[in-house]
Amino acid sequence: MFKVNRIFLSFMLLVPLTVYGEEIRFGIGWNPDVDAKLYVPMIGGDLFFEPTLQFSRDGDKTGYTYNGNSAGGESTSWIAVLGVGIFKRTKVSENIHLYKGGRVSVSRGNGNFISTYSTGSDTSSFKTQGYSISPVVGAEYEFANNFSVSLELAYIYSKSKLDRSYSSSSPTATSSQSSVSYRQSHATLTEMIVR
Image (cartoon, helix red, strand yellow):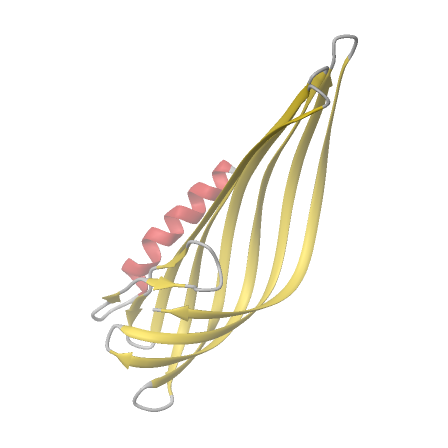
């Protein structure tokens, strides 16, 4: 996976330097439907190149006492997605553009869940990595030179690997197990993007 990520990052850095022969406009975009998804559009004429970064993190801690016995739990997880899109724009009117192209992305994440009680504890964790490929069509309305709202429709093919482990311990016994699973999925996604 490291080799794929290196190639992917090199591609992201080289494409803007070679695709555009004219002035490039840079900007920042945001998706109000998804937590912390950032778009960095680089527009040059009728083409644009758009790296994306999405990050989410979650955590929780609980504790309680029942019949004099204490118990609690703690969970932490995160996932990061790094992507890039390349699109061709077509001007429909002064403020409206249609665009088509595609996005590719790679993702990584992990999580830990710990439950403790008076006679022992349970621990589970996961690690995931994957990629997705999406043909995309969209429509963009420009309110000003560096401010627009887009509606985008994507058909997403994704594949991921999930490593899970679980262990349980008590004063009399300890057990553990692990598993690896693979998942493929197909889905459509509609997004509103402010650029």
